[in-house]
Image (cartoon, rainbow, N blue to C red; front, side, top):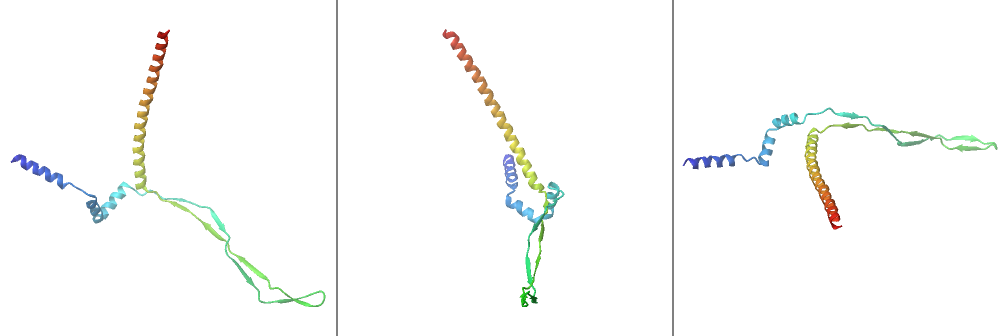
Length: 156
């Protein structure tokens, strides 16, 4: 009877400790302030960096206006010819400046840092296995050269 009660308690404890993604999402949406505090603690805001850009001049609109008053000009032969209306051009250049604001994403930095750490352990294990095979190659080469020398000496 005692073993049955202990077994039942263990089954209840094992089945009661399931946390699924659905439960975690529900908890996160229900406790947004606690989640925000936790995120602010784990991923603090770093200062932003303003990188000034260069000025870019873009040739802009050209406005052409004409005078409506015509002037007659005296010619040397005594006739008068209407002078063409004068044209006034106004050119507006557009000044464009693009500044860049760099905002650091500390959460992504932490993800990338953990990726770098895991990749470094992979590199270390691959280097170790490479060194092991390299040592095996050199030892087998030395043994083979030794055997060739021994067979060559005893062949004579």
